[in-house]
Image (cartoon, rainbow, N blue to C red; front, top):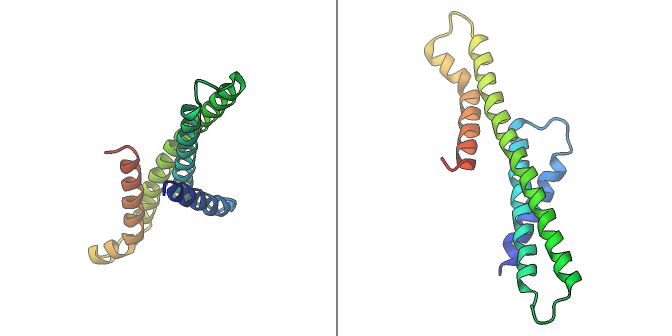
Length: 141
């Protein structure tokens, strides 16, 4: 039962990883990729720590303990790296969305009505809402 979420996260991570190969990824896509990578790494850390915990003290060899410990440490380094990338990607997504809204607003013709302005800015407003929601969720706000 517990293998299903790990496999699901790995599959999502792989799919997002393949889509990240494109140079045209947006800051929001990069934040999603960083979040998926972080989840994958957290699951690997948890799994390797469980392997270390499961070693029987009565008959575990020093090499088995060392190998399991090193796997946990490697996973922890990956978690730290991806947590930083996630924070950077979330910040970039919010910044990009805010700048897109600003540019779109500044590009409105002077005679644009309030209704038309609001309608034309809708995509940028939505983009900023999604980016700030994702960043706030990541920060548990």
